[in-house]
Length: 184
Image (cartoon, rainbow, N blue to C red; front, side, top):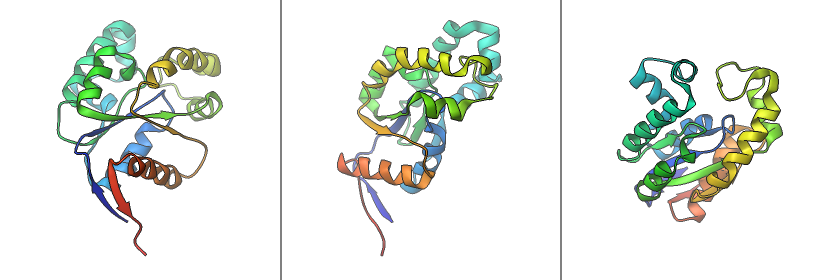
C-alpha cells in the first residue's frame, strides 16, 4: 500500500475510553509513516505519576487542567497521530486548538463494545469495575455530543484491527486527507 499525505496536520483520535484510539493510532501511524503520540503517556511522563494516581491525588478537576495544558502543547507539534485521553476533547480549549492544528476523528463505539473492552480493568479511574456499564452510559451521555464536533467520525465495532484501520484509511482518503492505492 502506497500512501501520500495530502494535509500535513496532526491526526487526532478522540473518543471515550475503550473505543480503540491507542490501538488504532499505533497501527495508523505506521501506515502513514508518522510518529505516534499517546496523550495519557505524555501526561504520565510529565507528572511522574500514573493517570489513576493523578486522579486519586489531585481529583478530576485538577487532572483536567493539566491534561488541557499537555494537549495544547501536543497540538502545536509536527504532524503525528495523536491518541487523546477519553476526556481531553471535552475541553472547549482543546477542541478549539484541534480545529486549528489537527484533523480530529471521533472513534465512536456503542456502550456494549466499550463495556466489554473495559470490563475488569482497574486502571480507569472514571469507570469502577463494579459499575462498568452504568458509568460508561453516563460518560457517553456527557461526551458524545462534544465528540460529535470532531471533523470526522469512524464507527468501530468488534472486528480485527486491520479491518478498522482499512476503514479509517478509506475515510481519510474520501475526505482528501490522504491518497493511497493498494499494491497488487
